[in-house]
Length: 247
Ligand SMILES: [Ca+2]
Ligand SMILES: [Ca+2]
Ligand SMILES: [Ca+2]
Image 1 (cartoon, rainbow, N blue to C red):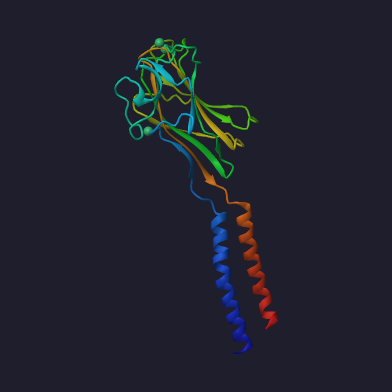
Image 2 (tube, helix red, strand yellow; image 1 turned 60 degrees about the vertical axis):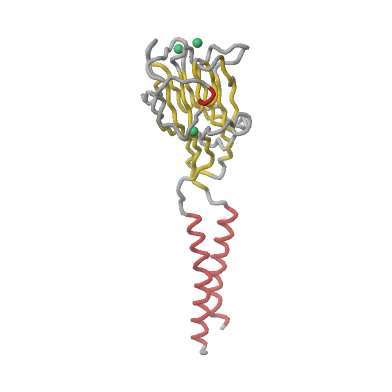
């Protein structure tokens, strides 16, 4: 084989080695689609494991805070995920000094490996039965599990009149019996994230439904992996330049 042929063969071999490495590095560096970080479907009791309920339980079957299968709800809720969801009805009638408002805390989620993190939740409520004076509400919070950043109110669903109102959020969307999907951006820098929902109600016609909580984000390539691959690509490129001189 001539010197020129050997150089060409070495060049081709180096290209074969380098191409997958460079391709892999480019793949890691390019933006990926949104990935699911955490979900809660409420298809089984997760109180104390997957989430924490404050003020769970009930008085009779129609004053309760827990899975919908554990109490009685006004008829007509539709569009929830699976067969069960978190529900609250007439929350001020529990005995024993149970604190109000009732609260749901999803387990803290590490979102440090993701950018553009969002929180999505299916929500529903009985319509036209709420009073601003009580005050009835459902609030969605982002809470820093590390306790460094202050809690951020993502949205508040409140009655817009003193009586006979829907629960309406900051964008003017009213809750109804059909579950609707809401999405909020997680606060920047809150990488140990607790999704908290607080709700309060005073009458048997006032009930809320919560289901299918999703925390999603865009995966950030791990610096170590990306650096290793880029270093390998740089080494390969250097080998390409050096090889002809050695022949
Ligand atoms: Ca469900
Ligand atoms: Ca009320
Ligand atoms: Ca009541």
